[in-house]
Image (cartoon, rainbow, N blue to C red; front, top):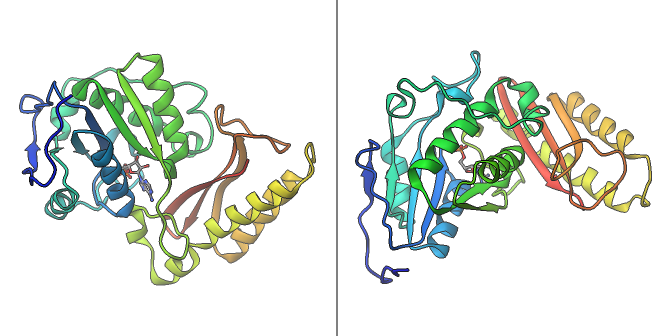
Length: 286
Ligand code: AMP
């Protein structure tokens, strides 16, 4: 393993085609897949990758196949110059910015992770996780042996990528990192930019409800059947406050199946809309 000496500013290499992509063979590789519009959540993945590996590659690709017909692919925030500047500021070595044509021309293969994709985001956004699994598989193939960094903000996505990488024998080790939040608790997201000032004021309530239900479940007696009532109350409280709740569920972290009694390795998952902006978040319980 070759250590790149500290204190030497490396230039950010920009690769736009697969042909150009040059991944060092004699260094440990950190890989951070993104759709751009960077915020502190992305930067925390990049900084950790930088601290833990020799050569960090970020991919910036707004992946059309993970957006539904009526979703925001066309208006998804894009600012390549700003993103490159931010990547540079945290010392990223290379950024891969392929075109849709580069990734998908003549491509007919779809990677589908069954069961884990069926519920929650998968149910609300049909085809979304096939798009995610397919593009991540393509990117893992291109980058090769690496440590790949993902944010637990998208917890179901983390589990699906974990399963896919293991099922397809990718030489990739996953590092799943904590959600970075605004000071009022709202999980950072590129889509928060869509929120109106009034909705931005309401948005932290989603995480506040997750925290409060998580705490309530932790205080329940083992085997207590009271969980559904707490989930129901949280859904009602959010709806009364102006959210359109998609799901607010208590699940097993491995299978993502709903739980009716408190159990270790469990988590709350939630998605709700404010106006046209869909927020997702989650909270570990036990
Ligand atoms: P995206 O650009 O939204 O596809 O996200 C790229 C990566 O950043 C994914 O692994 C996300 O889970 C992660 N990410 C997005 N928001 C956050 C956040 N608030 N905290 C930590 N990681 C995040």
